[in-house]
Length: 194
Ligand SMILES: [Zn+2]
Ligand SMILES: [Zn+2]
Image (cartoon, rainbow, N blue to C red; front, side, top):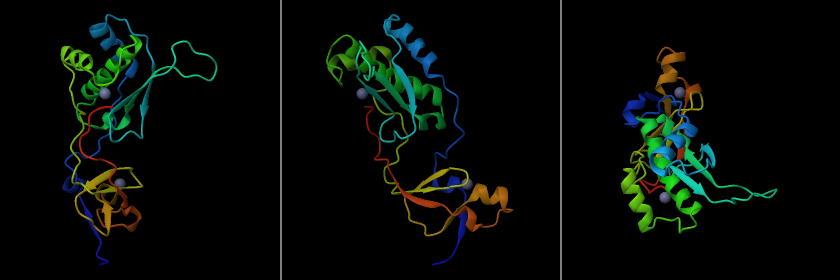
């Protein structure tokens, strides 16, 4: 042990993190609302969630008539989608999925993955599954505290440094300052959107 090496992110992860793309949830909501729901839906509380990992989106029912201290319905979209390829398309898919839950709930129907849910899903041409790269079998996730990049890996490496940070700040030489921290993989393969 004790041998340090710097590796290129591409060696570890076929989906290296990319800079997040700006995606406007409100306008995608309105677009889908006009196209598939006749503009019938009121905009719920819409937000990005940086902690959603095992699912790409989440609908939480709330109250329609709000009294103080009560919350309205909300839809959260996993923020990591904005770092994936075709981010806007993925967000459209996931938001579309959550909007069907919301639409069923607004109409006081069972709002789980019912037959009606899937019928609407098919009509809208929305993907049935979580559009997230498969991460199963990647037991470890490394993390660069300097540039925030994450590197999933199947193998355990005792000492890795972030190659791009070493390149940027240390002429490509291994620099202990950019040692990757290890954190467990929170991903459990592909799961359906919740
Ligand atoms: Zn880095
Ligand atoms: Zn769902």
